[in-house]
Amino acid sequence: MSVTRDKNTGKWMSQIRIKDWTGKEIHKKKRGFSTKKEALQWERDFTNQANGSLGMSFTDFIQLYIQDMEKRLRSSTVANKRFLIDLKIVPFFGRFPLNEIKPTDIRRWQNELTSYRDDKGKPYSQTYLKTINNQITAIFNYAVKYYGLKENPCHKAGSMGKKNADEMEFWTKDEFARFIEAMKDRPASYAVFMTMYYTGIREGELLALTPADIDFSQGTLSVSKSYQRMNGKDVITPPKTPKSNRVVTIPEVLKTTLRTYMSRCYGLQPDDRLFPYTKSFLYHEMEYGVQQSGVKRIRVHDIRHSHASLLVEMGFSPLLIAERLGHERVQTTKDTYSHLYPNKQVEVANQLDNLAI
Image (cartoon, rainbow, N blue to C red; front, side, top):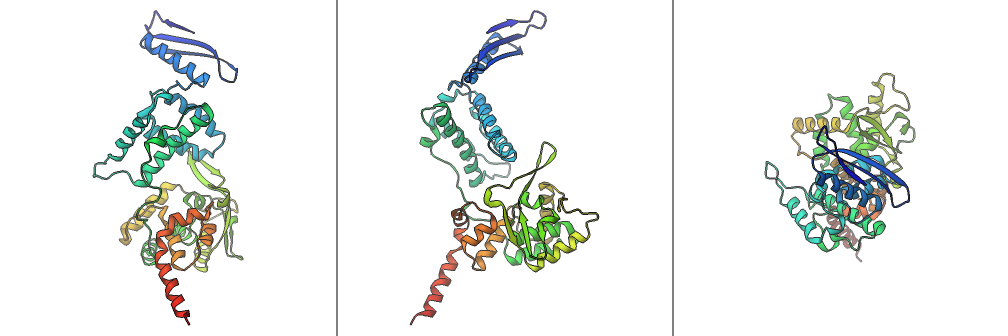
């Protein structure tokens, strides 16, 4: 290891040759430090990271964590994870040595996020806070399991946010009818939202559909892939989970809609994307429909909840709904939509009364 100063620029440079924790020799050089102290600090950080030392900075550990996740998770999942970590976690913990982060530090970070308000006085949603907290908990779980960190400070700090929102936003049948009526002069958008409402498929699953996925004779739609826009490129990946690979039955009204839409798509091939758009197109078109129809504003993803709530209202079981939505576990369906079932329990009691001898 050596730190030298460039006589011409006055800047400091560090050169380091070291074996990492796998035994591989690494030679690294970095220029442009304003002070000798900065160059030496970089050497210490690099050495700690190469050795897998718990004294490495949180930022350096995140690099190791993401490198490992890239080999195990879908690229879109890693990209979303990285975005959230860089935006909400690294700015607070970046320079902390990994093994010096305490439960009190976690709580101070949580307090900053829970006290945040935007320019309209609106806080982060409880589900968003929970998602962020899950990320940092996963990071420290990884450090405990694979790098020998003594304990996860998040466990003592406690959590923040809620897994499920207190009030789930969705459209009733009447609200969707008003919305879709406003989209009739926009054929592509009409077909998009009809498909989402009557199948409950995810945005990425919708945007990856091809004509070959639609079987009009059987009245089914096959979900086997998902679309993402990453680094300016269209990327088709496997769906979210193994159970997301599924065949969804579709009603006549949707079959008619898709037939009409596809007949207007000139030169459409079996393996072409049926809806060659991005998620931003969905958001823009939904905003247009909301303004034109006057229905309450919900997220595009909430159309999936609207489909599920429709199935609950029709009396279908959590098991069937889970299969249709591609949930990995029935419990996920129960946890997400349990608040929609109380009225059904009343109906059960009333029908049992009718059977009473």
